[in-house]
Image 1 (cartoon, rainbow, N blue to C red):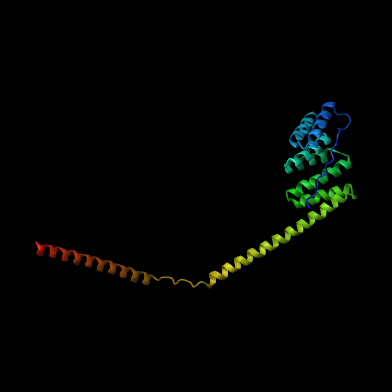
Image 2 (cartoon, rainbow, N blue to C red):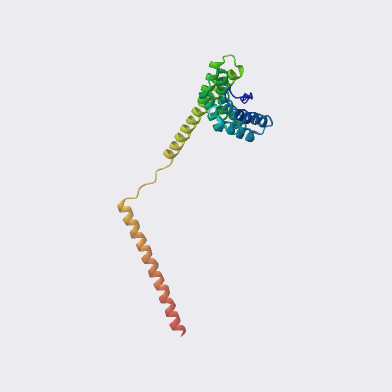
Length: 211
């Protein structure tokens, strides 16, 4: 079962931000609800041009990016949220969603750390606990698979070495053998030339007689 993203969106920016920021966030949330994640992400980015550390915009942007299959960018957006907020509830959700995005990329050590941080902020989050357990099992399975792969590679290498050892070694040619072989080839070549000369002479002799 794949881990689920927290779909909760923040609807208003913190007090003190301009109405322009809130306007972009509201517009982004409306697009997000319609599953128009590209438009939603752009709206949140527009909000961040007005207020670069707005944690509502960075958190919601992370959700939109994740839904738009941009997990790396989503993680960066959640990190900015965590860095810029003092609200533990916001940090908890950002850590959780960061864990989900990392798990999707099979970055298990970082994913496990994110879920642990989320649970430190809210120990009662059952979803975070289950996702953490799932990630730990995946990590264990991955280690077992890697170990098995190494064993298989060693066995294959051992079989190759045994196969090579079983093959009879070709005798090496000595200098004397090489010289003898060369003499034999030269003699064969001489015999062939002599034979060709005899054939040629025989043909010439026949032509003279016929003439």
